[in-house]
Image 1: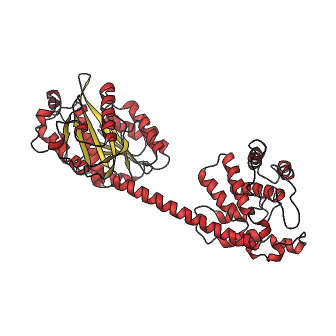
Image 2: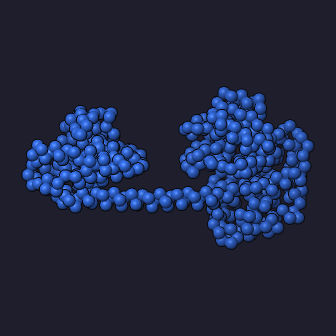
Image 3: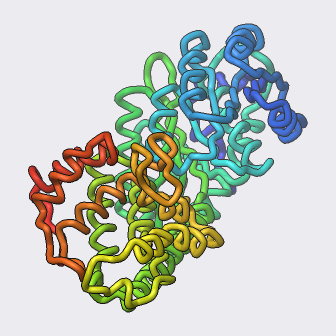
Amino acid sequence: MGDVNLSERVPSTLISDMNQSVPSKVLLVAEDRVEQDRLQELLADHYTLEAAADLEETLQKVVVFEPQVIIIHLQGPETKAHSLCRAIRGIASGHTLKIMLTARASDMENRRQAYLAGADDILPTPFGAQELNAKVRLFTASGVLQNRVRPEPTSVGHFSSVIENTPLVAIKGFDPRGVITHWNKTCEQIYGYSAGEAVGKRPQDFIQDEGVVNELEAGLKTIGRTGQASLPKEWSIHTRTGEKRWLYSTMFPVLEKGGVEAVFCMDVDITPRIWVEEDRRLGYEKLRRALNGTIKAMALTVEIRDPYTAGHMQRVAELAQFIAGEMGMAQSNIDAIRLAASLHDIGKISIPAEILSKPRRLTRAEFELVKEHPQVGYDILKPIEFPWPLAEIVFQHHECLDGSGYPRGISREDILIEASIITVADVVESISNHRPYRPSLGLDLALNEIREQRDIKYHPDAVDACLTLFMEKHYQFDR
């Protein structure tokens, strides 16, 4: 930090506190022994470590071992880790710090719930040894500032070195007036301003990004008023050269005699992760458009051969996805239903065109040939690796709850809900629209068919949702 003298910038009471060290004890909580060993290997050279595998063992070691940092790395539902956080907060001292490791760190709702449960930070997986050690080191260092227990000799120079040389994490210090007191090397690397340019000034004196200044000022005011650390958040800055960077930041107070003596802000540059996520999103969007285009092309090959039913599969797809939405299904399921419905009659490509467009009712032999189209559609789609079981959904779209459908005659729980929804949409569209061998029979007859066969042939939830769409929400087919 150049010629900046720590003793000139830090309150004397704080310098006294830094002469009392807190042992760097870390408790690792992981059910999987392999994960325990991996975490111990990453941290073993720097900290005193203990491990726990379940709730009872964790709470026992929190009391006996008295760790400064608790790293929680559990598999399965996030709620399990959240419950453990709350239990730890219930028995641990107010200064015990935790890091929750989770593969869903990009999920904002999961992150919010984690902080409400008592987590101090979330480290996205996968993570490297440097990143993990940097965060644990910072938390143990901040523990020196906030806790005055178990005094042991140390030096101001040592703590200054921790702040100055901590890799990957930018550390800024502020006095109660909002003047910068600390600006480590990582700050210089991220923001592009040297310690000499930053220390002794306010952020608005040299940072041109109004959003950054407002974020910092709001955080300082809140911490000064409440004396509580801020919840970590993601935000973007523009560096001295105008480059946009994304930071994962948290701010915490240094308390003395009931007041806030100083505030420290820790920033981790997550720009590479944001870039990866954006590339992944753009790549997914590109694949999604390609998939939709491919499916439309496949559907068109059928409809070109059967002009009398042109648009049938598209109308069924639109109604089916609205039924699924009315049922409250997840977006992923709705997407699967829309795509499967867009292809549900693709097997008809194997049926002679003269049968498809025949202006009279089919003979028994002709209808038996038509009944093979679910099997043909399944055979066409099965080799393609879709994210959903589209081939199986197409295979089942003529099955009925009572087992009277085809081609396999399966019933009830053996039928996928996605297929049952398409069945209802298919029946309503087919009856209410023109066919080569007859005019439209009308929407009323179509709705009466699914109403009378509700929970006999057709899934009751799908029927109810379909009736609601037409009777209450005035749904209409896009012709």
